[in-house]
Length: 556
Image (cartoon, rainbow, N blue to C red; front, side):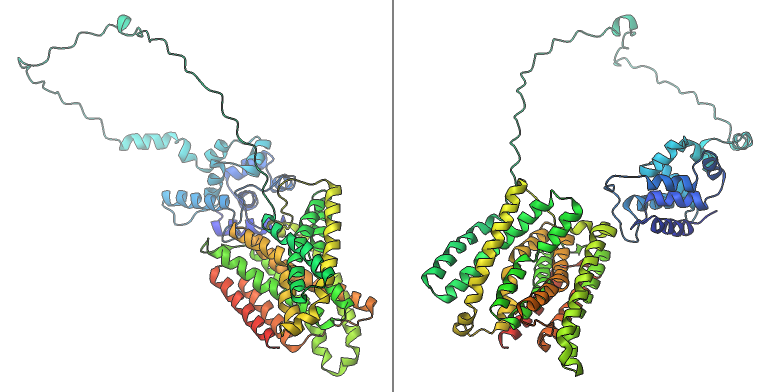
């Protein structure tokens, strides 16, 4: 008889061969068809229910996954866990220590569902037939068993005579004999009074959820910044107004991109969301390159990765952990995202290592070669996450469109208008950098490392925090780690290319402080996310590391 461990191992192999990320009840049934024995197995094979036929049935299944198919601890679905528990109860009831394949079969056919029910139906095999062949003693007994049971049964005892006590004088007189012809006639019921029923009150129409409603206040910064620019107002006030104006415009670009992506299909839509997700950072960086702030642009690249890994992820885990004691997310998706991020950060750090050595004179060419390799890797990451292995990243899709959908022309118009205004506000911001650094005694490194990344990613920061508070930790982690990967794989190569076109000579050589900060942040974020669960204190630790890096940048 096949043991339960052997059956589970075969089911895990079949699930992996079919491309499933968990072992379901259908894989347990397929394993029974492969390694099972006995009359029930022979009857199923005779009816045409073979492993190949059932595997073909699994291959033709379509539609969204079942609600109970979420993988639990050990790689088993919730229904598969219940089947194994039921099989264990059956084995215990029979006086056995462990369950076997027949126990699993009986548990599967007790409540057949999904592919198991379809397979039995198409082969015209009734669950009762398999049960009778698996446990014949549970349905009927042989004549010898019945004779043996009859021999062991003691003869019935004769009932004792019950002596009735003599009636007393005060006893209640006996009731009259019941006449069925009279007593069985139902008594007439009074007619029911008609009830006055009011028509049901119509439900109010669902209100479309507001999106970025809190950002409407920041739109006032757009006309204020224009007025300060043309009137020659205070440069610090213009810098603050430009920063505040970019926040809602970045949100508008992201939302308009989602509106366009919703009408272009999942592949192109995912490409649009991934590409235009960092449009604000690219526009601000190009404006800074035109003004000659190369070191500020390079610091903004490092700062974007640090703010995503430490600030966004830390705030998301901290706020989500205040509502739930343990935050869980996909370890597989988190591990793949961490691996891609580590590769991207290694590509950014490598020219910095060579920059101080014998190959220093070739660092510009090395930076361009590395940028090209990172761009090719970015294309491969899009193909991986959106086509070949998109099921692993389904929980972290950025396209979370809500509310009223816009017409395509309106979405394209809003996207173009917001992009133009962001370009104008970026010019205002860059024009005031020199005055702000002198008046506030700030370094360009602090502006690029801390201030500009927070301004450009404020809308995305809010999305991750809101998602974590609603219990969507998977989405929050994907936003934080995925945005960092996009900065390293897409934004950095684009800025190197823009530097070549503008004659600025942008390289990927970063100061030692930024290299160490990037390395430490990547390692800490990987440690936090690789186990697939977190809590509020880990979020607090990420925020503490970001605060220490910001304090160090203040004194540079």
